[in-house]
Structures are given as C-alpha cells and as structure tokens.
Image (cartoon, rainbow, N blue to C red):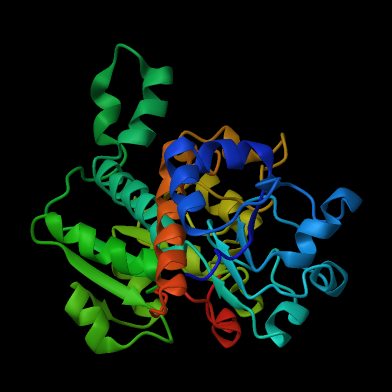
Length: 337
C-alpha cells in the first residue's frame, strides 16, 4: 500500500475553524498525511520549510496567499490545489498554471446559497416587501403607502437574469416555482438551447431590461463587464421594477444607480456594491427604495462546509484515479469569476 500524500491546509484561522470541524478533519486525515502542522495561514514561515518541501497537496480557502514563484519553489512536489471557496483569482499565479498543477474550486457549491438568497429576494421583490418595510418606518399607522410602490404579487412576473453563470442557471431553475413566470436571460456566451432547457429565453440585454419586473445580475466581474449596468441601462428599466445584485459591485455603475434610485422610479436590492462597503455619505443608504445587505448571499458559517465537502469529494476522486468534478482551467478564467 502506497503512503498517503503529504498535505497542508492554507487559509485564515476563522475560515479554518468554520470549514474544518472534527468530522471533516478526520475524513481528511484518512485521505492524506497532514504532518506535524496540519494548518497554516502563511507559507513564508522558516519553521515550515521541511514540511513544505514534501507537501504534494494544498487545501486552500479564504486567506490563502498568492502562490508566487518563490512560494512554489518551497513546494517542489506540489501536484494539486483543492480550493474550498469560490474564485481562484486571488491566489492562482501564472507560475501556478505554468507548472501544470491541478486546481479545483468550490464555485458550484458556493452557487447554491447565492441562488437561494437571490430567489428569496425575487419573491420579496414581487411583493415590494423590503421597500415597504422601509416605508413603514415613515408612514407607521397609515398603511395606504402599500399601494405606492407598484403592483404587488408574484404571478405572471417577468424575471430578467443577466449572466447564465452557475448561479444564474440555478436562479432560472428556481424561479420556475412561481406561477406563470417568464424568464429572460441575457448572456453573449450562453447556449440558447441550454437556457431553454433551464426554463428561460435568451434575449439581448436591450430587450430584457424594459420587459422585466425584476432584473437580477449574475455576470462575472471582468474588464469588459465593468459597469455593465450604467445610466442608459437603468433608464431602460420599467417603472417600479427592481434591480438585484448578488454578483459583484463593479457590474453596476454606483453613481448612475444613485441618480436613478433617487428619483424613486426603480428599486434596488444590493448585496454587493462598488466600493464595498459604500462610503458613509452615499445617498443609497438613505433611500427607502434601496436595501443594502453586507455581502451575505454567498456561503457563510455552516454553509462553507458544503465547499469543504466538495473539495474532499474531489480529493478522494483524485487519489483513486478518477476524474475530478471541479477542475479550474486557466483559459476558462476569461469567462468566469
């Protein structure tokens, strides 16, 4: 029987505590040799030199440092990195790709809570619940304000999904639970047949915006998608419609959103902003038709263990010679977060 490969967990202390409880550590120890120090938040400590020289597998998450050439040189036997979080952009250097090291991530697992949060936000937006909750602070005993934010209800809604990503795809599928729903999808890279199979219809962004009661953003944050939703796009949205952003703040032009929302014409539910957090004097904080949450849609607390489990599943496949399910290919990063 061949010896277990040597492995190391690399992430910040809070993430390690959240993602690797005793059950998951026990499972990991059954697959690999964790050595004398199973976890670290730094790859630069001289005390780790001997351990790094033999490590073949890293399990990483939030807080992992950039894997520079200097750090990789300290790990000459490194063969695979199983990332227990979403995007690998923060640590995957060109040198990592050039060495042909296998990289996986937990983006599929992380898509689940974001899609759930978005679906819940869509249902609440259909009732204008968040916005009316803000109005209640002003109107108090007079409930007549409930008719001033547009038609209420979740039957016959048109939902616009920008970005047929992992999350966008799940959102399209989840909203099928609503009665008589129409789902429009805008994504220049999406397959029309795949969109149709999920329950949507692929259309240009210019068609989606004025037709949708609720617009939800799920595109990747790339140079070409920066301010994908700007002043012209916001003006194109129908009266009393809602913009939901659980993707990245850079996809929406904050200044344009401030101007448009200040008119009261449209509503916004923002889990991400640019910058993040918004400056203290942003008008968006004070507008009753805007709801801001502190980037909570993605995996938090116990939800993060879903990504650990996915990484451990792929690690087991890797060690038994099976194809891993969540491999990240460098070329794909030009189209994904």
